[in-house]
Length: 225
Image (cartoon, rainbow, N blue to C red):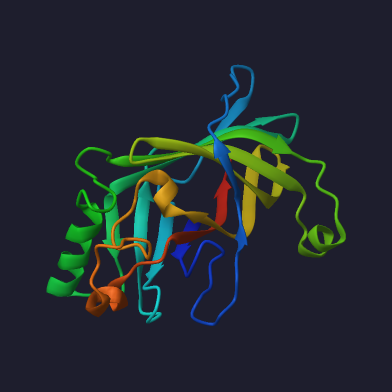
């Protein structure tokens, strides 16, 4: 199954339960999306999903699950990726490490206005604005990274640009897209529930604080029909 993993961890530079830090994606103002009328579009597999995992800031407790995708595609020209859009359907969100009432309770919370506000914002969207194939560093070469990908991420009606390195290959119209784990700060998209800077939260509730950062690990393929 093609997957895009999303893992929440500790702090703006994320720290997982094992204490490892993820690189922080460069975040800025939304950028213009180029017209791709002449590019060939390759649709992602209908069963592709987004995997997510969230941690509490101080206890390290975690939960994880999936989000399905809407119609998503990559755009290619001359065997290079030049654009694309990944549409996340938040109504297809699920929790995979809980069952029965606990699962339903967490799902209800994630869909609520305190978090993703799914009734008003049923989808999230990542639109690629630029793919720079000039990445050339020793560390990148060791990991097989060959691009810097820039794009606009829209969540809860807020759009910011993010930039991260990736390993991309295009062959016979099929695309393989892999990016090492990187983090973004959820509060920049208005997802502020139980964050560590909320002074209204009583000390006794600090164990329920949810990390600012979300780690994204993207690994997805699109195959030409």
